[in-house]
Each structure stands twice: as C-alpha cells, then as structure tokens.
Length: 288
Image 1 (cartoon, helix red, strand yellow):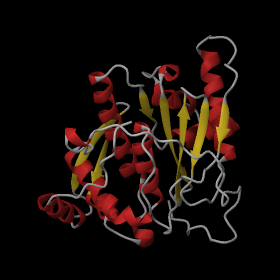
Image 2 (cartoon, rainbow, N blue to C red):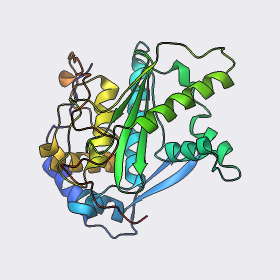
Image 3 (spheres, rainbow, N blue to C red):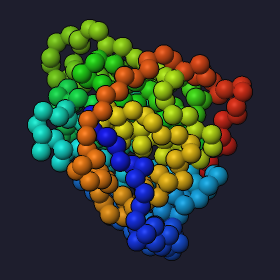
C-alpha cells in the first residue's frame, strides 16, 4: 500500500485559499461536480461547515459525496497507471437509505429503478473494494467497506454508537440480490461480516463523523493504516477543503509514495453496541 499523505501541511497560499472559501457567501458556488449523470454544487455554506466546530461543523451529503467522487477519480487514475491495482468504487450517501426502503417494502414508485442508477455502469463483482457511506437520520455518519478479495463486509463507526448489524445484513442481502440478477448461480460461500474494530479511529466530538468516514475510505482504499485521530481533525478539515477546491485528492510528491504494510486488528471494539453507549451520549440530532 502507498503511504497516505493527508497529514502533509498545506502551503501558505493554500491556507489562505481555505480561509477565503470558509468565509464565502452561503449561496456562492465553489465547485460543481457530476455523479451518476447528475450535477451537484458545493456552496459557500457547505465549505463554511468545514471551518466550524460543534454541531455547525457537521458535514452534509454534498460535501461527503463530492469528496468520495474525488477519491473515485484518483483511484481510477491509479488503476489506469497500474492495472494490477484492484478496482474500487464509492456509492453515493443516498444509496443505503434507498436500499433500506426497497428492502422493507416502503419503496415509492420508481425508487427501485432509481436505486439501480447508483451502479448501472459498475461491474460490482469485478471490484476489489466497495465503499458505502451511511447517513443516520442527519445526525451521524458511518461507513461500510465490502472487501471482495477477502470476502468480508466491514463496518466503521467512529462514534461507537452502533455495531452496524442491520446495515451489514442489508449490504450482504444486496450483494446476494445482485448476484442472482446477474444469473451467476448460487452466491459464493465464505462471506463474513465484521463490526467496528479496535483500530477504527475514535471521534471525541459530536461533529467530526463525516471526516472520520471520508478519511477512513481514503486510507482503506490504499490499504494504509488508520493512523489518524481526533487530534488531526482540524488539519483534515483544511485538507478536505483544499482537495475539494482543487477538484483533486492531494497525493504528495512521488518520493513519498513508498510502500507500507498494515495488519488490521480484527477484534470488535469493546465500545460497540446496537444502542448508543451508556458511557457516552449520542450526538444531538440535526434537523433535516
């Protein structure tokens, strides 16, 4: 895996660029990007949230999806340069909520067809990794990673508020459904699921879950160790801002792209449970 350079300092000019973006008018368009043939805007108010702390610093879907789109762009370029690298794909934050409605039968007319758009041009079972962001009722972000090489579906919750069992089951059911739809016979055996583990970085605030999601996906796509913490969040807010403004994930100098080896700790985190921890209250819900 390549060394991740997210912690590299920003240049003085980049620092100023970030400050200007954080102070931009709320309705000013800073970046426009396309995902699944739809166009989305990142506005001044979205960038402003990256510069805030507390509940005002909670990241909306526009920011999360834009950053994941940049990760997709980077990974596609790396794959083109080295075909031996496994394919990765990043679903939109809207995928899981739509699939949960379809799965429960509470689907609206046309919603099941709309769900298929998220992966219409993706050969899911040719992937090495699939990343699925999950937004919990506009108050918390978590992440699912489907590791096709090792046949495991993993869940990452930086807040330790849930073990993700419901979402892990839902993700496996979706994979089984897609396998049947492709007429490939019986779904392969040997697949497992794994909730939040001890090496999952833990947030100590009520607003940084989106940052933990985004940079977990960034690091995991490289197979790099999840060696960031709450102490890095102020810098990573700036790093994410400049990456979005430049429409490119910073990768550092070629000399820094050396190899590292990481052995993940697969023991479940002691704090994980199916309900909010009794020791630490869940963050307050945000209004949709």
